[in-house]
Image (cartoon, rainbow, N blue to C red; front, side):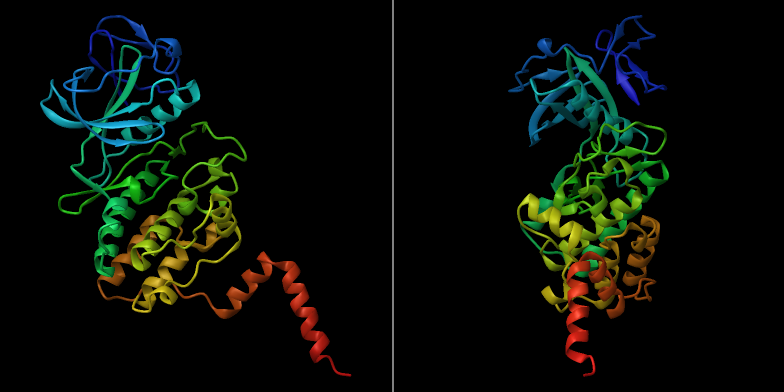
Length: 357
């Protein structure tokens, strides 16, 4: 990951990312930290007009959330358009700063045409920021408020997203918060996966989560993440999230809806409604592969994004997919496992009515 010295503005390639509290600049000899920035010294920067942060001229705000804001900016040194992500002032603890830097560390490992590239991390007057590629377009979430995609358009888009995730997984990075808002589309509707703020790295990284703490967006998270086991999830968690996006693209609805408490209950205990019940024009193979992604048990889903991409591409090429519909017996067995008390009651009632006198 590359960071920029706040004193001489020279770039530093950080090889050992384990210690972000003390970084030595080989150019000017100064020492600085990214994690233990003095909270009292973090000011509220005036981002109006032609404000700058580092050597980046902030042009206009393109996004704002609970954690901070994203700006379109101009890199005065390399003369290019970039995105600058700035955390909200006054609400930035050491742990949240580490989560902010996690996004940069995770994305900096990745080099894929459908993943937003992170260029560097900087510090300006105790204000930390991340600089990344700027995608001139809208998020998939924004697009879905204005139009519906055809099945072929939806699957073509998802193939690219899934292959981008496969690249991340091969480099030991699990996204853990994939949703339409984290997929940007350029003017040609080319997708770009972004926001690896909750990403988990396999390569020995201690995650910031604790048992019982939920991470991610409830409507798109798999059951294991909904149980507060986000630090244990693997690539099949992202497969589940892709399944939710597929479901939404095909039906115009989410598989589970309601309050956070209701969403979590449904994610943990209820099967997603059949997509064809909401839209009977959906091809059966697309329903089959979508529901395979949404299986409660990770080992029932696609084992990898590569396997999912293979089935998606097979459908686009009018070839048979490898996934098979769930049988009536399998659905009954899963229902019994989820509701053992009701299953036992039903069995007892059956024998009461049908037992011989």
